[in-house]
Amino acid sequence: MHSDMDLKTNYLGFTLKNPLVPSASPLSESLDNIRRLEDAGAAAIVMHSLFEEQLTDEGHRLDHYLDYGTESFAEALSYFPPADQYHVGPDQYLNHIRLAKEAVDIPVIASLNGISNGGWTEYSRLIEHAGADALELNIYYIPTNPDMSAVEVEQRYVDIVTSIHQQVNLPLAVKLGSQFSSPANMARKLAGAGAGALVLFNRFYQPDLDLQALEVSRHLELSSSSELLLPLRWIAILDGRVDLDLALTTGVHNHVDVLKGLMAGANVTMMASELLKNGISRLSEILRDIVVWMQENGYESVEQMQGSMSQRHVREPSAFERANYMKLLQGWRPDPAGVVHVR
Image 1: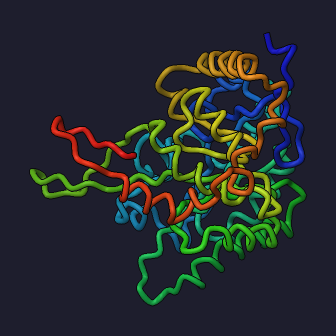
Image 2: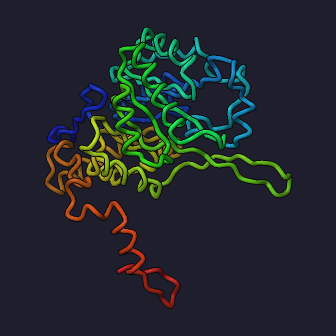
Image 3: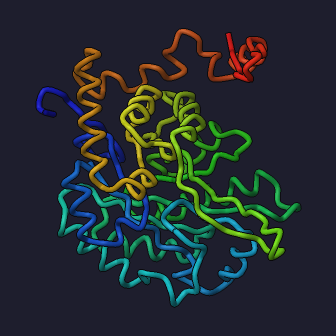
């Protein structure tokens, strides 16, 4: 069914057979799942993260992060556990990469999650030697110190990427959160530090309050397609403005989400929540739906649509900025039935 369509795309120096890449999640802890992901159509796979806390107990204790009450993407279905309770330790992680490389033909992208360049630098070399094709840096940092400026926060990211880039020959992707005052400038800085791609955006889980127990509560909610809009906007803005590949993550659940990401300018679209909720077979279903849509709408290749609706190419570039906000507010009118209408 895919033979008449050219679904290939480029990411981190690799020519991928299509733009669907499972992001870091518990699925990749199993070699059987990794094989099934490839069979279902995954063009590459981002391995579950190795956390900095697994590499060192100096300086950054797990309880420190528990106090923040937040966690990283769906790769951690509970909050950071004690170090001896991680599913896969550092040595096992390296061996898992070796076995994954033997099990599949698609690129295997390792993932490191942390906030410092201490343990990461050395371990990134070991990941390279284990055979990983690329490395995704999930820099998870919540600046709570009021004496720390935005410049210092950004420099921490740049220093980590610079340090690892100087130590390994692996292509580097950086997975970012959305809360930077100038994402476009930050993207340019990371490109200068050696990043080859940006993954937008990381999905930080927020703490809640249990009013009965008077405790910070924690629970995981998988993403929905409504969360696509924020990364979609910034992919569209950054397309053609930074020398980086762009991966859209968070909110990718169906073929429409994938197509929107590609037209905004993404090289690949990544998903985890959809696969965790509805199974690995969703990959093949989404691929099928992409092909059907392309056939019905006269597209012959993914490259043909990539960036076609980025800010540089749409008829109204200001729609990605303040103008859209103003038009939405000005066009609002009440409805007796309580439905909001925007003209």
